[in-house]
Amino acid sequence: MAQIKFFLDEKKLPRYWYNVQADLPQPLPPPLHPGTRQPVGPQDLARLFPMALIGQEVSQDREIEIPEEVWDYYRLWRPSPLMRAQRLEKALDTPAHIYYKYEGVSPVGSHKLNTAIAQAYFNHQEGVKRLATETGAGQWGTALSLAGKVFGIEVKVFMVRVSYDQKPYRRAVMETYGATVSSSPSTETESGRRVLAETPDTTGSLGIAISEAIEAALKDEGTKYSLGSVLNHVMLHQTIIGLESISQMEMAGEYPDVVIGCAGGGSNLAGISFPYIGANLRDKKKTRVIAVEPASCPTLTKGVYAYDFGDESGFTPYLKMHTLGHRFIPPGLHAGGLRYHGMSPLVSHLVNLGQIEPRACNQIPCFEAATQFAQAEGVIPAPESSHAIRVAIDEALRCRMEGRREIILFNLSGHGHFDMSAYAKYIGGEMVNYEYDPSEAMKDLPQI
Ligand SMILES: *Cc1c(COP(=O)(O)O)cnc(C)c1O
Image (cartoon, rainbow, N blue to C red):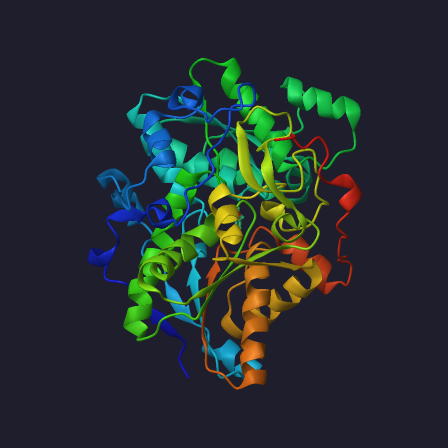
């Protein structure tokens, strides 16, 4: 029984990204200026982002062309493989067919390079020489470090402290690509110094690291800011994943009943699922989409759908999204990329419209699923991706109980080669599930 791979002909690598905004039955609530509470205009964002990305943020075009230079770089690892997990199906004794799209084959080991290379390109086109950014587990910082080097841009990364301490090699990777890395909260920004003064032992959070990166960009005229998830243009760039998978599923002669992705800021989930959601909205297809988040940072399942800041200090516009409050510090779970208080406004809107089902999982059952997957299929998944695998397995077991042959597709957003200390903890029985503490959530939520 050979594992089945479906590689696309390189000539079929999509030439455009898919913009779900073109197919929304109700428009996305716009970001608001915190002072005026009016929708922000392009000029409000121009200090932080190049105009091309601001244009993509609000575009209503269904297809947005991938520039030749970006497309050419994608060819290094794209199309990424679509695999049928036949050994896992057998181990689960399920009639379901399980497929996964493997983004761990990118040079940096995750889907993040899909948008990093596009963002670096559009910044380079507008003459930007320096970018500041945040990173949680280190995947985004790694991707932007490489992408910056490709287009001659210096990259400064604020890395969430718990990951900085847990994953020292991630920092070394970023530095190998030529970036400068600081542990966040740092003493280099006012945001960082304030948090350190209030809570010296903090684990840090993505919200704090975003504040530090924006502050660093605002302080230096020649520096712009880059975000690895959450924003519409990031969701857009990631749709290359789902677009490829549609052609690959066609080669397999199947169409998914269920599409699953883990969700931190929402970008890999958007990437795999938005093209299928577009087909649901346009062609009355009925694919279910499931977003899987950590039970200890349950933005979609326990948060509110409200206007909130995207960062801890309140530098960003108000974004309408599912949120636990911008002051929420998630516990130090191993899936560092899922430790975010908010969620992509597009993903939040689609949850609200009933197009995406949210689900929350604890980290121990996720590592159990990741280990079962690794033993069946060989790939060791990133702790973030293990959340998608947990639910893919649960769905396959449901199919077994119901005797249904459904087609399940999940996104394997990255490999876990830099996360072996987490696997060692799991194997050694030292891993714990963190509880979500609602008393720590929804603090200082803007009243709108
Ligand atoms: C960053 C990351 C995530 C979470 O971010 P999303 O924007 O929700 O995709 C998930 N998986 C991996 C491997 C990551 O690096």
